[in-house]
Length: 416
Image 1 (cartoon, helix red, strand yellow):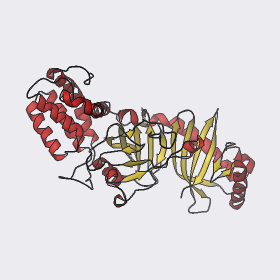
Image 2 (image 1 turned 180 degrees about the horizontal axis):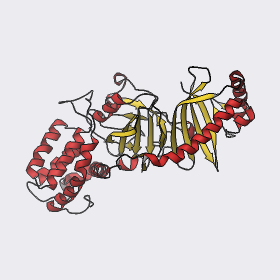
Image 3 (image 1 turned 45 degrees about the vertical axis):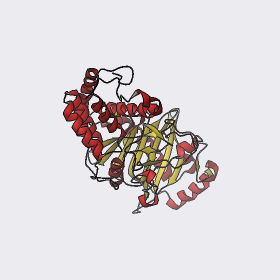
Image 4 (image 1 turned 90 degrees about the horizontal axis):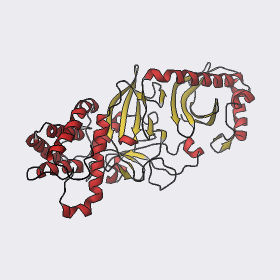
């Protein structure tokens, strides 16, 4: 039901929230995960997901026609989080129902509506997105289709569904990926699919957290901290995309959360939620998938794709171990480029590397495969390359693209 248009009697407001709250209650209980303290707090130390959980509990009480209890909880929520604008809106609606029926969700006085129309519209959208994401939970045990294979080095992973304004945090263990928490997020003012510097869009693709910026070096605008990602990645660069400085970061002290589309391209979370992520994930090894809509699949469903691409990777490994430069170069695209070197400039460098290996076999350790499909089908491959007899070797990352029935490498670099 659309709560944002026309006149809405209080009974219909209650009925709509009752429906939403009934569906949301178990999701909230499962989705909050462990709690971590925020670095900055005005009163009691907030926990990740706590404020959203309390808001949904208020919706549930409204749906149960317990308006007095809902009002008391709303009053406590805005007291604890006075900068939580959506909670303030619900609190205002509950106060209004004490004197008259509601005209609409977010029933502000007519005289003040023109000045705050945009803010009200954004709060309504935020409310709907929070409810939708918590109501439409991922299937139990499912994972985003992009996570084809993660290595033990990838202890955590992040997937962002921009259509639901939601970030999903995973833990990777012996039994595979496990969803441990998820949070409301804001993206670019102009939406998603960043192409150029200053277009106010959030990029789409497979990225990695590159650093953890010291909060003391940041303005209050960024909240409890920031985690930059490697936009533009080699696939972005291949397509001529520009821009920089895409971060996961928090909110300024006067904002608990921002509108769904409110950033210059970054992904923004409430400070308690970001603080949990900062204290959980690892720099350089944590993948971040940003998608228009996540496709959730059973882990078993990616096994066939995994096996097929591992066969391709095995063929590349065998070609490199053979020492045959022509056989190896057949795996690279004509427009391959790394560190400013074209394929013609890269081949002599690779020939020298092959001569040093002297035909030794190589092992690909801690292999991870992340798939991305839009106008092309691509694969982001990370592994440690260890020659026979050696204890260690370089950590490499390759970007492959499907060209007809074949997979080819268009970027290869050492990352560690």
